[in-house]
Amino acid sequence: MRTGFVTLVGRPNVGKSTLLNKILKTKVAITSDKPQTTRTRITGVLNRPDAQVVFVDTPGIHKPRTQLGTRLNATAQGTINDVDVVCFVLDATQPFGRGDQWVANLIPPNSVCIVNKADKAKPKEVADQLVAAAGLKLSEYFPLSAKTGDGVTALVDHLVSRLPVGPQYFPDDMVTDVPEAFMVAELVREQLLRRTHDELPHSIAARVTEWDWPLIRCEILVERNSQKGIVIGHKGQVLKEVGIAVRQQLPEGTYLELLVKVDKDWQSRPKAMERFGY
Image (tube, rainbow, N blue to C red; front, side, top):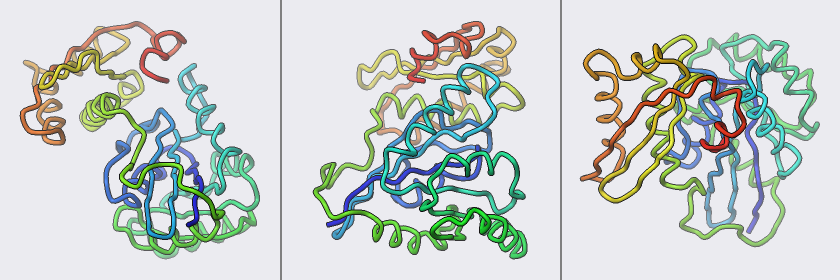
């Protein structure tokens, strides 16, 4: 039995969370096309007859503009030295840039390089990304598609081979350590991210404030009154759509109540960020 920890690091929107969900064949991390979708360290456990791989999904490492951004970077960088294998994820549809190089400078030389989104990229783009990444002289390179699953099995088999022999860290039936209430709040935020644009996604936070089955009350936080109107939508349409989409992912009979509040500049206040687990 091989057991150990693997972290996924990279810039925002390279597909780390999508890859984690594909590996585990279940949803443990929300996804969207907005930067900084992942805001916390999320653990996903892959159980196989021969191995237990504990994956750690991290926020995208970026140039921070707020105290929240600084905290997200610290969360991601904090996993690099605490795991058995580091996976550096690149986007095949985007040229290798300074942001990628900055992340690459943080990781050990025995890291694994993953060139993701091979399903969207042209063959030449994948090849160019592999050539650019080859200059990093990392241990292995895997072009794949987290969306379709092509190449994922080969990656996982390699990661298992890199882990030490040892006891399991978690029970066989455990897939994630994410609390249910936190996951519900994340599902709410995911649906809001899919319906809002520009700078608003960065200003949205969510948390469950009451859990008395079948009632789940979730608080949505924004930074300005104008943002509150956008989140609620004309005659409450946006909030209604969000509630319907989230309930479809919850047990039948769930009553989800969504409340929108304004907390000015919460991204710059430590106590406000801590209230949402950031």
